[in-house]
Image (cartoon, rainbow, N blue to C red; front, side, top):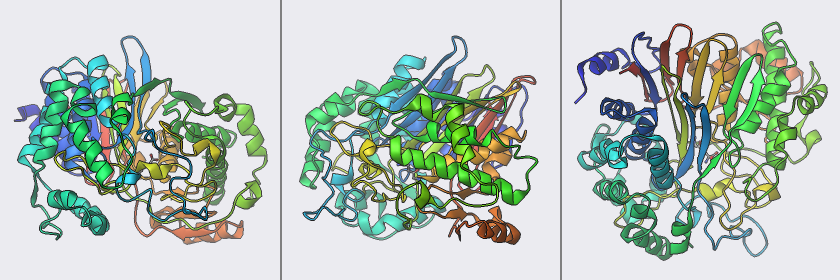
Length: 557
Ligand code: DON
């Protein structure tokens, strides 16, 4: 049960995207699902800190938003602990199995076999989420793991009402899910889509979470659950072994850092490309006074910065444990100045002048993000994923764990597009135990008066969404505005600006086209940004959840 003050505040925040100011209250949480936000406050109520709350929110999302993230996936938790200034990135990204190899998704002629890295057990990499939760709880939390996992276990046992967004994503992947009786048994009703607001119970997942709660990482990575996972994957044509699970380790990494107009940026380091691409784009843009330029030029300059930063993503970025990444150069202001000098104020640079071929991009889909901050400045930005909605579609019998299809984030072949139209080369080639390059961008922004915590799902578009939100923060706006910003995106290849319909006026479309840009309206609005803000000077908190999703932002405690 919620304590009274929460109930009032939660009622106040029932409408998505509502920015809630509640001076005197202590913690702000924004997540993609109301029950996940509630789980966070439940754990704070029990005496947990923001890191315990982050464990609770992550685990709850794994249950109530199974399309987006889960124990069968991975992700990144960016943390800041105020009392000693510890700032770290928990890299819980999945790893390629030991038996993985560079050409594993190619046919005899060396062509990519469609969907092999997206659908079914062979698409699944070794999950990092369970290890991440254990580590986050044991090293940074103050409650036992079992306590922080309790709300998620309860949601899995007793069930929850499924929403419209869930059903839309389920419909999108139902063809795949029907191929796997165990998965269909959980998410479909005799092979049919369930009714809106019907109750989804996940008893096997509740048992797996209980194993994790009782035995820590051994509860997932060795013993009975591990055996079921490995056997199930093997039977379904996958290549997992016991050693893969036993040897999986999260890595704590130094986040990447940058500056933009007096704002300190802290974000995800490789194995995610998010932080580097974000800071590189902001470094390029720092040479312009964007507030003084007209709207067409402003959008042109932002697009050209995105083009160049995403181009470097495709050339240089991959798992830092496997390749040398010129991080210092990519983040340097001099390097950005060089890139800036190649930008004409009146003309687009075709991407094939940078390098590569122009190709079409298929539509992208789901993942999750949540943000937490307290009024001491402790904070967590976490982006978690199983990649495509419902991941690989595969659940090993008796585990309830939907496995990811994150192997698709590798470059199966240099220059070939992945599910988000991204291209890569040797830096992101498949290798045993390597992490596939991510775009997840959990981020902190800090200036003299405030600290922002933000992030979003959205595949390759994650970074450009966070970039637009950062520029909005720089204009002095609050979280309700950052999550609302109409979005446009350019990722080097395909050479096109994809825009939400309200992001461009007709005259902007014409003006940008006259400069040589190609433009395409997005078929739907995208992203599900979750953001919180701590106003240092007034000691107040604010939170906002993207109206494009079904999340909830609450300031409370
Ligand atoms: O790590 C990545 O970049 C992707 N697997 C994230 C996928 C994602 O955000 C899907 N959401 N729309």
